[in-house]
Image 1: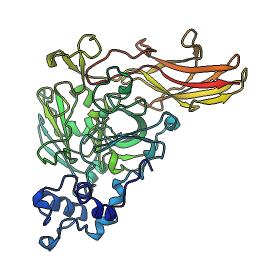
Image 2 (image 1 turned 120 degrees about the vertical axis):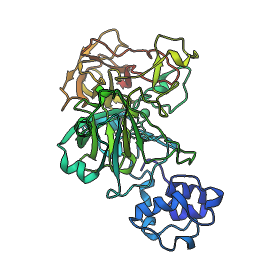
Image 3 (image 1 turned 180 degrees about the vertical axis):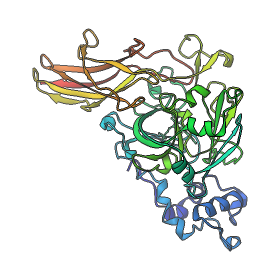
Image 4 (image 1 turned 45 degrees about the horizontal axis):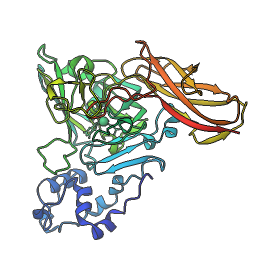
Length: 435
Ligand SMILES: Nc1nc2c(c(=O)[nH]1)N[C@H]1C(S)=C(S)[C@@H](COP(=O)(O)O)O[C@H]1N2
Ligand SMILES: [Mo]
């Protein structure tokens, strides 16, 4: 497990506020300490799949036995011990580089980025997805309808947080100091978003989507979305943009969006709304939380590190840049001088393909081309490997760099600073000693 949390019952004794937060996904207000009511009761009922007739008698802090057994979902037991926890409120966890060695990322090694609460899992039977706005006919779809009435696709898709690599920027912008592990490439099964949008009938006026979900803002204000981003209609109509219903052949774990989420691969992960309940087609760029100001935007021109950039000079990010990670060896190891060993990793390039991978062990003076595999499908990351022979004893670094099909190569130094620290695709490196 990535970080030990106390059991919920134990927690209710020690810290009832936090326990309430975990159960209800919100802070217990003063009016909630006496009896359960309102949204807390409703969400509890939704999870139980029925109402609680004697709810008026329920003291706050008493967890229905049925729930007490399931709340362990809220601990991070589900994550690998080597995952790096940046925050538990909201939950933000990244993978150590060596955990990204699988071609298909298992759920326990997939990063988690929450902006708001970790919601109680909504019952699949009650979950609905609304498609509205600039459509001919509003749709309200159940999980079973999506599963049965639309063509299912199974794709390996990379999701990368827009701020992956933020820790490399100086001065350090606010936000999670992700190193390199806010990326994953799991196998997702779902329906193409465009098939659903076409069924609703996309109006000429539709230019953008706005996404909503059932997780909540950390303030506990039910009218404030935790995040509500969207994307231009072309990206949302791309055949690789999906409403995912399964992850790695099973239910999507709660932390990754149960029962359904959007995946708009290759773009900042925030476009891929988890726990999605509504897709609003809009006649203008969406303006929900996460769309405006400095959020997921970069300056239109290069700026000095630390600069204050006027909001009107910021533009919405699109594709993520070419990037790669060394997943094996882990670094810090000893090898025999003059003897070959293998380095390997993954590479990806947002909307583009990686066409070349190279490694250097002389601080970038010379580069050796690596073996590079084709992606399993578009938007899957690509396996690369190379053989390294340290010529003599001493300290070395392996640097790895990818080049995309537009001829763009990863920089060795940190690229353009921006106020929120997005798009850092500097080379990943590890060190080793030859003896
Ligand atoms: N509903 C909802 N969807 C969300 C978020 C969120 O906080 N709430 N975070 C977004 C961000 S910023 C990222 S990077 C991805 C991360 O997906 P993951 O947690 O499954 O790795 O989810 C996106 N979808
Ligand atoms: Mo993100």
